[in-house]
Length: 259
Image (cartoon, rainbow, N blue to C red; front, side):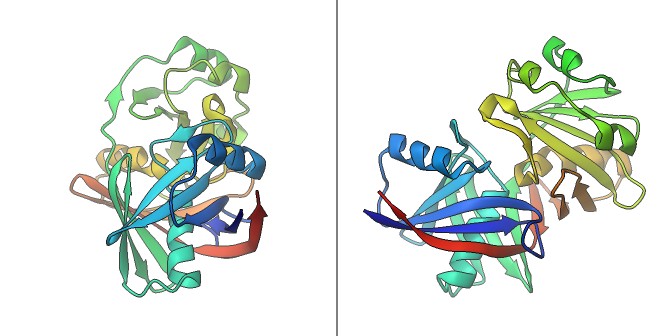
């Protein structure tokens, strides 16, 4: 069996930046175990698979170790493949997923994800997270991930968490964030529990970051930066109970998997 595979750098204007995702378009679903093996072999933070179903595309995302319920950058990468390589003709497409319908529209050179907002609630810092970070956050919230708010931008840039400790949390991952001098805010994302010590750019994290920063900064539109080693710039907007997350993408690789 042969499968076409694309490797796309999402939230990037040029290769070797942003967050790389593998994208595989299928005629019909493969066995779950096989898709998990492919994701492990790819060894990227996410491999996205999609199948056309009527007017929508059913999308699923796999880390090297598990399937996840939501992923932003691999959705952006999949939209790039459909629009730019597979010649999808409409300006907007719809992915059906475990997180509901996710719309993506083309906006000149960028792609805009329309994701559901994730409600966050304040909480105590879990013991495992407190042990994982040398500098302690000033606020802690929980939703799909833990959201830790730090005093300043340098705390985010200099953070070196203990990844073994972060494997013991009761959430997908940990987002850390602070106000920024150049951007509205900066962030990083750690998800050791699902096999990703640090994710370069995490689109889905902004479904939790945007409602938080909207309250703090009293605004609805943001220019943010995920300050991982690769880094990625994200443009986002709060629209009611939805969050729009926009970014660029570029193709790095197009090939064939032999199974």
